[in-house]
Length: 256
Image (cartoon, rainbow, N blue to C red; front, side, top):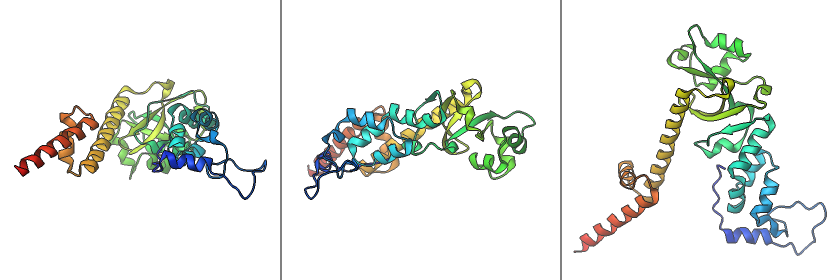
């Protein structure tokens, strides 16, 4: 859920089972992995029962405790339920490009998709949706009102949270706003052009993260990492194996 845990599972269990010999727990003792006698806190089934009742901010904190907690707190079903619960959304579609999307679910994470038509202006849209001009420009990464003419749609901040009740939102990475938002469409039907563009951008972002990871692992430049990823049909494990095999061949050839 956007948090990387470096702690080993054996260390986790040590923390979970640690005992406090100086005093016995009282009814008011806080249950935590650091001061608890409850080995149940390492059970994924019990953790799911606990975490499914937590707000999104507490899930983000729980995901940073250890790998066991992270695996449960990052579960898509649990995270989605916590994310949409305060706003009474019916559903949230698609996975975000970045896991940091789940760290909070304030009203700023949501936006209305408005398809621009002739005669639209930032000022007229601000009046129509009862929001501030600066809020629209800030959300859409616009320096001036003229930025509207180079776009097919604008993201509109939500002024009344009640419009989210029993609605479906779509997680999208907007190329102009340069941010991921949960987008609300008229009749809950996404615009096909924006949907396809967002999907392509998401795919490109995912590939870039894989290439960056291979670069660090192989200690090579960007082009070399892309080459091995392409010859392995996009499989990072196969790319690493292919690179290791070539590296061994070069070393053997150098000795002969």
